[in-house]
Length: 199
Figure 1 (cartoon, rainbow, N blue to C red):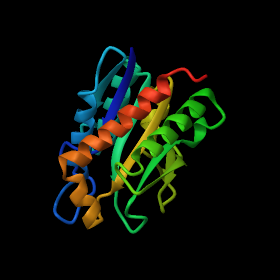
Figure 2: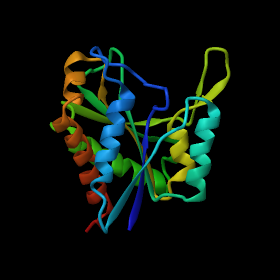
Figure 3: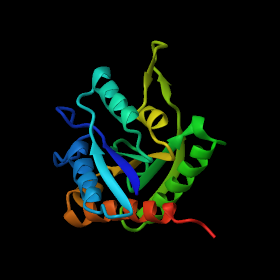
Figure 4: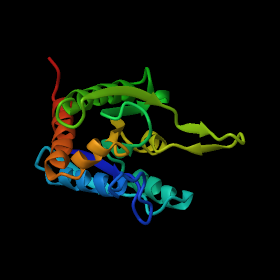
C-alpha cells in the first residue's frame, strides 16, 4: 500500500490567504485534504497532517513526526494570492532534487497533477521547481514549505497551489463542494496514474 501524507497548509490560528468573501486558504485546503482521505482504499492510504502553528517549533513538530514514520509520498496543499494569472494552479517540486531519482519521480507526479487540474480546478496549470531556503531582505534565510517535503518523502514530494483565492471568481469556485471534490479527485487520479508501472 502506498502511504501518502497530505500536508494541509496553515490552520491552528493561521488562516493563510483570505479571499474577497472571507474564505480562507486554511479552510479550502482542509476540505480538499479530507476529501482525499475519503479516497483511501487497499492500494493508497491518505493521511492528513497539519502544522500546529506558524512558528518554527510547529514546523519542527511535523518534520519530526514524519521522519519517525516516513511516508512514501507527500503532497502539500496551499492557495495562491496576488496579481499573477488568477485562473492558474501551480505544482512545485524541489529544485535540489533535480537529476535524482526522487526529483524525477516528483517531477512526473507534479506534471500528472498539473494535467488533471486543467479544466477541472483551473483554466491553466504549470509545474515549477522551488528552493528549500529563501533569503529575507535582511540576509537571513527561512524554510519554505517544500523544505518539509525534502526531508520526509521516500519516493516523491510536491506542493500544490490550488489557485488564486484572491480572485473573486476563483474564490467563489473554491467555496463550492463540486470544486473541492474535483480538486481532490484530480490529485487522487494523478497519484493513481503515477503509481502504476509504465510500459
